[in-house]
Length: 503
Image (cartoon, rainbow, N blue to C red; front, side, top):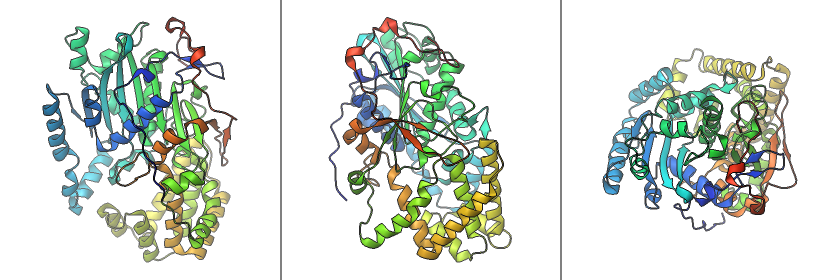
């Protein structure tokens, strides 16, 4: 695998986040597409996974609050005290709880607790002074965590008022803490006794607010960015010109019928054309989609693929199946087809699937298999019914069993050619590496960091064409550019009034 040297980033330079809006090619005012703002965003999105705030506080960010599984870890009087507090609370509440979860009985209970008592969510909230007396308020939503219950939200696909239920619940939990997320240093600088996130949001309802809300996140974090942005603009009435957002590998979050002009929101979504996650969720993204057409340079640098003749052959066999899964509906059909392909197979085959997925030793999965009647058939039937329910909820149509059976036939053909372990391993290889966020121990060459640093000029505007049939990405010839010469003065900001977006 090739190596790329990450670019130097000044986390304390927030000027790229407060630049005046510009007129887009579609006639809609939006934040300028800015390489530096995108770079800051992808790094913060990556740092959210480890709650890594030290580089940000060292760069002048203040009032850092971590939201971890419903608990707020707030700012401390001094930098050293704050870092020490974070470490201690992370040990007791998050990182070191991994040791406790090695107890199978404990993990089963904890998973059932989260299933019955609500989903989980994590975020970094902080502030930084900006030019002209303004303040950038950053909210970085973390993507899906490593624990089994962290995935519950992703699979709550049924719709609530046209919105993905699992993602919506996480946003609502975050909103419940808005009045308790405090900014003491910012309040002192502004001459205020108390300043909460809720206070800041309310000030953004009026022209002349000194605050800019910066939202970002990778994967599930990109989904929460979209829903939170919509609820603040449409629900709370904050002015869109005070919001800028960047999502990476963001899933879709709403039904196409629930939002008339989804691209009008002030968010940019960067997607890798090989990444399947942005094709799932619901039907549409909120904000403008920017697609990077994956090429051999990206794949050889970031994916960690083997390039021998047999590995290339296996990927070529599985690629058509992956390429057909282009929307939530087509993914669910593919999943249901694979479940049908597993029916009647031995428990060893199912265990091989779990082993490739890394779930073979998970006590919750083991317990589910042990409780299933007739081996695992009951578990498969439950999964099939669940996916069928999600399909009908999202698309408003019955499951097309002819297509499900065709998907099952193709899966059986792949299993016959490659073996079930070989098929699953190749399928995962076609999907997982294309989704990584930033450079870290597990991903020395993060895909989305690579795209931002080396592929910014190749990003192309795209629109997800969703429907009951497999969809494709329609790509325009060129991406929007940051045309500084066309900047409008701050007082001339105007946003089209569409479904609650205010001028």
